[in-house]
Image (cartoon, rainbow, N blue to C red; front, side):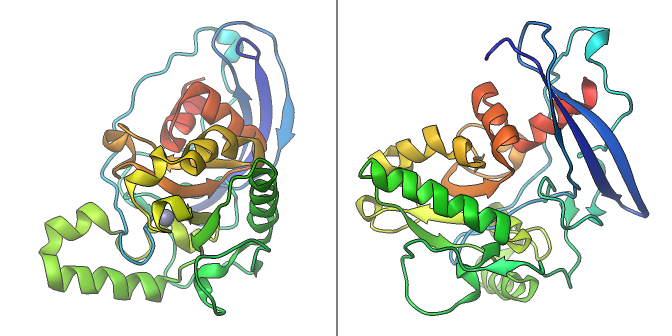
Length: 285
Ligand SMILES: [Zn+2]
């Protein structure tokens, strides 16, 4: 599959700072070398994204530096450009697009609350009916599949923190500000509106072997390794990979899963990309 070309047609509604436009985009995913063309169609909207961590450590993003990925041939060109992730701050308009990108430069409206939040049927690290148990329905169903597959391989995962409202993020961010000041806070916490958890598409996951904590150490556990290798099959990516801070703005977070759908997640995993790099590549195609 490495050398196969995949084409995806995606309708993306983008939000750019001030325009409410939606663009229909023809997308191609390609894999490094050959020229088989592919395809599939996907319809999504796309806003920006970013994230925060659970309770205690939210993260923030700086500006991604992109690498140029060169799609080589004309035949791989997109019909029209898509959107630029790197422009100054934009407020996402197509908030329901599962490929939205929330990061330090793109934010969700303060009043955005997904309208299809449900509690996935998985094990949680805590009891009670809290907002953080929720995910958008498509992501929730995918998380159930992921956890079930893990369980079949004797990998026990626990969901720790999913949806987080703007208001909750506001409170978290503020408490960090008081404690640590702006610089340190921005290194670990997202400004309200910039947390990927507000999308309802992100879930932090841990294991008993990591004391159900959200720490880098989780990435070294059997559960963390399994998750890294298998999340893509179920539509999730490790949103903040190791050594990609310069692009995502966040430290490595092996626990933070972001739902993007199986096709995109598999592509990102196989090509070792971040979500920002993925869109950058698509734009340059
Ligand atoms: Zn997170």
